Length: 123
Length: 108
Image (cartoon, rainbow over the protein chains, first blue to last red):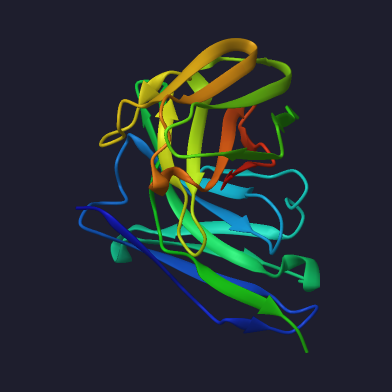
């Protein structure tokens, strides 16, 4: 069964770069049918999509975060990663990685999620 | 950017009752690209519905989705105690995903 696991520092200082990695197990990241993405849940707020990546490297970013976000994939390690630069307290959130299920152009939803990791931005 | 507005913000109901969640889009959304999720405190979101009306694997048939264009609905026909959670709609369009702000379903 496919599983996703987020990893990275739980505390980041303001103005620094937040770096998280999602490790995929029980299946390959290199599939034509899936995109892989990051979503966050700030305290007291709703879900916010950050960005998504295909195993061949094409990326899509939330326009509101695009200037600060970079996603990349390492197929040899079955991992994809998020970098968010110049963080502020507003970036404090639970960060989730998730599989986006696409098949022949039909969207089957974000069907597998990691458990989430809490990132606090504070000095 | 398509904005999804969910209503009500909070829904207070009792087990056994019927729950109806609304999701309205700022412009037309393809039904193929509309999904619903359930999230409980401390847990990751769980996919309920994709393609506006198709249940995801393992989702009980008391959950149903409907709608088209700019108006979509999630219905829980008869609430079970484990259904009390936050519900989000989500759409894909123009190479981006957006979520509604969520509806909290609480026990009355």
